[in-house]
Amino acid sequence: MAAADDAAVRDLVARMFATMYHAPGIGLAAPQVGVALRLAVIDLAPDDKRTPHVLINPEIVAVSKELATREEGCLSLPNMYADVTRPAQVKVRYLDIDGARREIQGDGLLAACLQHELDHLDGVLFVDHLSALKRNMILRKLAKDQKAKEQTAGDR
Ligand code: GNR
Ligand code: NI
Image (cartoon, rainbow, N blue to C red; front, side, top):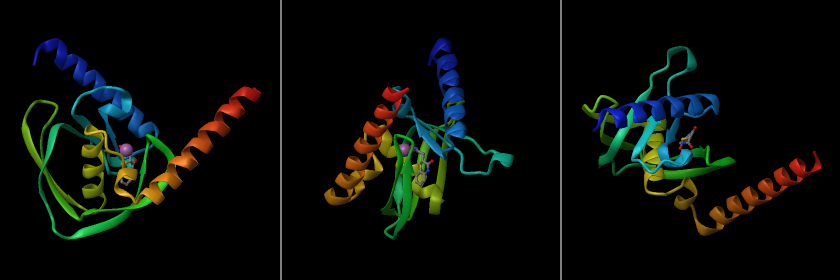
């Protein structure tokens, strides 16, 4: 990659971590900030021992047969939460910020977060894993919240 691209990507990554920590969230994908790159950042560690990971062109290379269900939320669907069932463990291959090939294997929250972020790169949101009934309930609630927010803004 060209040096200018490299600086632009580093700058994007820094802004994505700032946005994610501020939210606060444990992951953020480039498409969530309007950037069409296959890039995501994650950090599941507590604030006092941050462990940032930058995933460039990440690919799932293995998933467990075993499934796990946990509650997910998404910074792109504020205040919406639902139980999502996914493979319990995944292995992801990616390039780090220095272009080095890396692998991360995770279960629990890390497995859910990795799959959630990789989904974003393909335009998939956690609600797309729910039944149409549950998805519509959440999307209606989101529209209602949005309308209430616009109303409040109009009152000012
Ligand atoms: O902050 C987040 N928490 C979370 C919890 C369970 C499963 C996935 C996530 S990712 C989410 C931030 C986000 O929306 N990333 O795209
Ligand atoms: Ni999300």
